[in-house]
Length: 197
Image 1 (cartoon, one colour):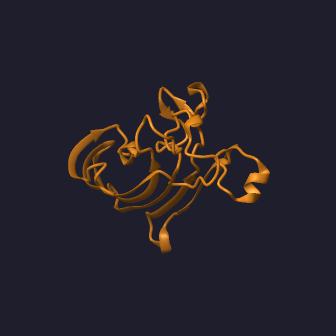
Image 2: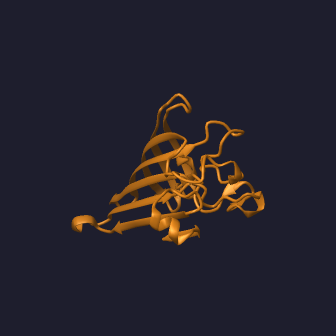
Image 3: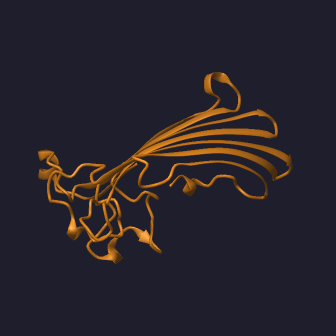
């Protein structure tokens, strides 16, 4: 998928980091029954969103709904890689391992210069017209490892076990997170992608 928010062809050709050449790219692939192994699936996805994409000088023009980004939870000014392996070795047992890595450029403060990551902010206070690159500002690197085991005891009634690690670099802005979760769910999906952000 490709989104072109706004652009000027002569500035794209110049490759000078003009702030208004805003776009996003999403690409991915899914491989079912990897190497002939039944119920072993692999999925990968790569996303990149330039600074100031989905933002506007008026709050009513940005790509949000009730203050939340519409296109991607990270907003803009990031690169992201997702890899997921899902395996069902037994009829009632599902195992999923997800690895997610992203780098996002954040503002140093909400009232200072806008580096293009927070799509709710007015881009009139941008860092500059030229030299803008994805990840500019305070670059935060995040890695997430999520292992989820689900056993279906009876129809749509699951016992879940989950091990989760979220690591930041530099880690002085956000705390690293590790937890183990055990639970049950009934007629509910275990997927909660927003927990990754």
